[in-house]
Image 1 (cartoon, rainbow, N blue to C red):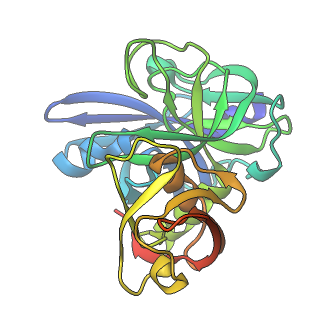
Image 2: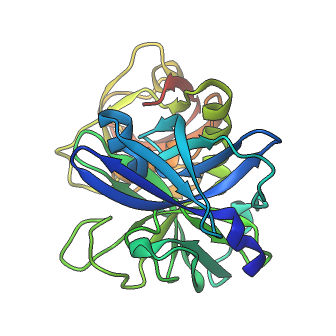
Amino acid sequence: CSSDLPSVVSINEVVPVGSGTGSGWIYKSNSNSTFIVTNNHVVADFATSGGTLSVEMNNGDQYPATIVGRDSNYDLAVIKINKGNLPELSVGDSSKLMIGDPVVAIGSPLGLSSTVTSGIVSSLNRPVTTGSTGAESYVNAIQTDAAINPGNSGGALLDGNGKIVGINSAIASLGSSFGGQSGSIGLGFSIPINEAKRIIDELISTGKSTRPVLGVFFDTTYTGNGAKIARLSAGEGADKAGIPVGSIIKSIDGTRITDQVAAIVKIRSYAPGAKVTVVVDLPSGGSKSFNVTLGSAASS
């Protein structure tokens, strides 16, 4: 773990409305520059308001940073510094995680750089939303009891082999929503690296990213079990597969769907073009399975 500390950085943002800190980790480094991954919410104020953005290394060196690209749907961003040959984190395989596996979180909680906390994987595929209404990020999260606090956002969750398996993104707080400002109560959430890597690579290649599309609009007033389809997007996957309006999605690829957040999170865990099996309760009664090819849309 100590050998991974130089690959995790502190990110400092100074904007007209104030300042903030977060964490990031080195994904790619060549002879001239280095790409660092963090959460979108760590750099969003700088991206929209201007100011200064800087990266502080484990040894105290600081470098100005620019934004390569960001994706609010997945709460991911890539920034760049003009300093090369820095140590990259090894990328692990989050699909191999099991509940109870040991994990380590590295970041800068409350601005305290190079802080290491340990715990276990408490749950997998936990549907989590962060952000404000209308600008939500949906995370198919790894849940951990490793202490994660404000400022840890964007930092690394490492497996027992020191490989990154998640990007620490949110916490549950007593009396507050996800991402609130109270301290850790042992409920931290990380974006699985297997899901994040596609977005990260797209942002580095093009500055933009894509998200998969089922092609449905959910009935937000529905309070029963499952996700009720209010209408379809013409020509998208659900429409082409023949799923009727009014159907209630009960499972996607065998994962039980309890509400619309669970449905959105599950769909966004795939890449555009993926084929999924959707089981619904039909409005006419009975249950039916549909094979759907997911479409693609620009992510924001």
